[in-house]
Image (cartoon, rainbow, N blue to C red; front, side):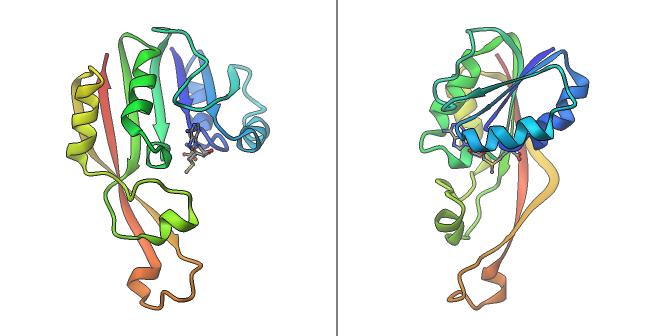
Length: 174
Ligand SMILES: C[S@@+](CC[C@H](N)C(=O)[O-])C[C@H]1O[C@@H](n2cnc3c(N)ncnc32)[C@H](O)[C@@H]1O
């Protein structure tokens, strides 16, 4: 399989994927993130790196078996555009796999973590996958949560300070 990890950051997902696939293209908009990813993934010889905005992937049409994106769409001003661009690079029958935050109430995450979206309603993700032309769509729980704490000392209520947000997995086939 040839796969892509879009918004790959420091290579957390790619480290799990690289031993399982023939080739993995690791893409991130931040050159600094990719430098760290290169160090973290240096033991793998099947990884290539692209600094790029995820809305304009430097990857040919219909060339990828599976595109993965973990915790990336909620940073995108236009998640549908990001999804459509990942669909563009999928081979017919290829799959898109997104894991990201369910909708949550923690507004401080927008200020402190460059989040554009406070997670997503799963129905919204399903609609976007349909709009991007995917079929065999499934949106489900991963059973995992993302945890974070605000650094804003003005937020004093402990429940508001500590975010624990469930993570969904959405898949669809081109
Ligand atoms: C929360 S991190 C997730 C990193 C990685 N996927 C992981 O699971 O550890 C989000 C990543 O998306 C990248 N990112 C955000 N917007 C992007 C964009 N428009 N194009 C490409 N990368 C983007 C950021 O640079 C960051 O590395």
